Structures are given as C-alpha cells and as structure tokens.
Length: 172
View 1 (tube, rainbow, N blue to C red):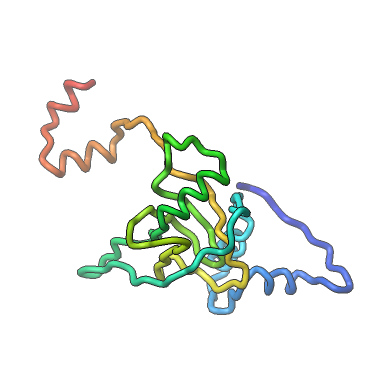
View 2 (cartoon, rainbow, N blue to C red):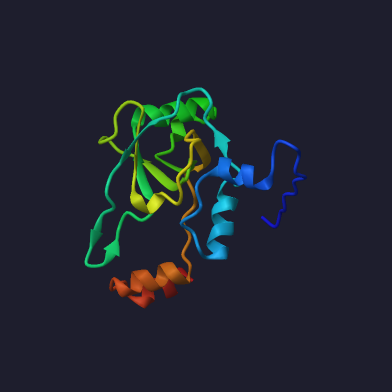
C-alpha cells in the first residue's frame, strides 16, 4: 500500500520486542519474504470480536502429480461464517461463502464447507506462513456477487477448452 511505520524505542519496548510479539520469523532467510511476512501483520483487516478464537484443525493440502490444488484455501464452518456475517453486518441475502482471512501466522481464503462444524476452521500447510501467539480470526474481505466479464485470459482458457473463436467475434 506504499505505507511506512516508524517506532521510537522506549525503555521497555524495542522494535525487536514488537517483532517477537508479531510471531516467529526465524525460519525466513530471504529479506523480501521476511518483509512480506512482517507486512502481513499490518494488512488492513477486521477482527471478528464477537466470538472466541476458532478451533483450528490442520488438514493436508490436496496434491496430485506435483500440483497443489488447495494452495492457500482452507475450510470454515457454516456456523462460524454466519457469526462473521452478523459481526460485519452483511446482507444475509448475499451471504458470502468465502472469506479472505488472516489468523495468527496463517493467511489465505476460507470456504464454507460441511466438513467443518461449530467453531471449526480447517487450515492447510500452504496457509501457514509463520507461528504466532495471537490467533484471532481477522477478515480482509468477503466474497460477493460480481459482474462476469470476458478478458484475454478468460478467452484463452475458453479457446483451450475448444470454444470456437467465432463465438467471441460475434460478441464483439
């Protein structure tokens, strides 16, 4: 977002103290990735205050033939998604089924799925970027209805699936 944070150390708090509070980044050796993970803690989110921390369950990523099909996508219970809708005062008729989130050192998307029950959130290894003590659920944004448009990438995908080019020409 092109922002910067400045901090003047006090007798009781240093920049190192703040970084330790944010999480454990010792495993990150690349400076750019280290800065990105620190920045993750400063991303604009909305903490869902009306509920305790969710019950987090680690589930494996879905991988086949060297590809990860669940990269960054976990699962949230219908019950928990309704709590988010109420807390954020969203329109219940446009109830979102996916949430871009941050939760401790995890980030990514959570989709509503029947496997998760009650206060459960299923997190995948591809979502865990670092470990942190603070594990409250924070929402970056929710899915919503959007107008579909054709762009070069979509046309290329449709053509690779054998959609004839004359269909797109006719639309033009």
